Image 1 (cartoon, rainbow, N blue to C red):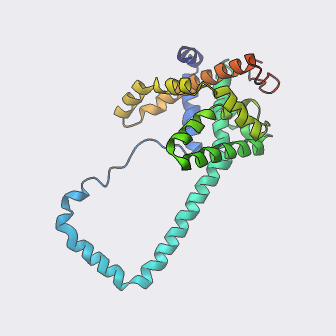
Image 2 (tube, one colour):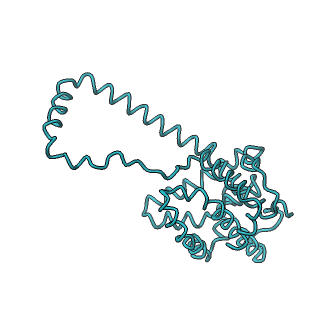
Image 3 (cartoon, rainbow, N blue to C red):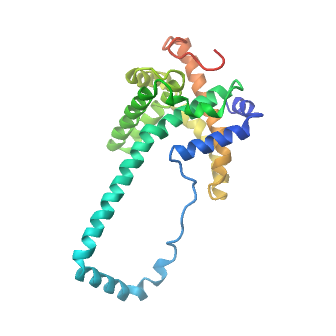
Length: 250
């Protein structure tokens, strides 16, 4: 699969890099660069406690001022969180489907940057609905324990690719089809991810910037995994080319 991914990226790597970088920005991805501004404050903590006492006294004497300020800031933070969630649901997630479509098309050398926004065509509402229920299911399972949520995320590995092929598929069918396609295959998906650990460690040495250049290789490899799962599903009569019509090769 990794060799097939390398072959697919030959001559298309820089386009794939640009598309994945743009998808990360539009999907709410982070740059991986952390802030270390707080390092070192503990060194002077003991010698500065009197300063904290003065601050506490100030707030106790001016409660009528800072309580409304805290309330306003809390409301603004809540609105920011709600806005971020809505952005992810209605924009970021569909961009993710387009990202998957790009790499499926790239297997045949016919990928274009416009594929990133293909999910915003007819079928968009259904794409939003399916991904909402997928993520809700993973979240609810994660409330039980972390492990069930992780297992559920592997179980729904194929959902985004299924939507890339068939944006009109019913959400129950999309989730069930992904469960069937990944049944007995979750370990292989995990091992495929784990095979990149050496690259991840090298990327960490570059303060995370290396992940930008690694991402196209990973995404192309995961697209190969999905196609292998789809071919196996065809052989097992779990689905058909009518339900998953494929992309450029069909």
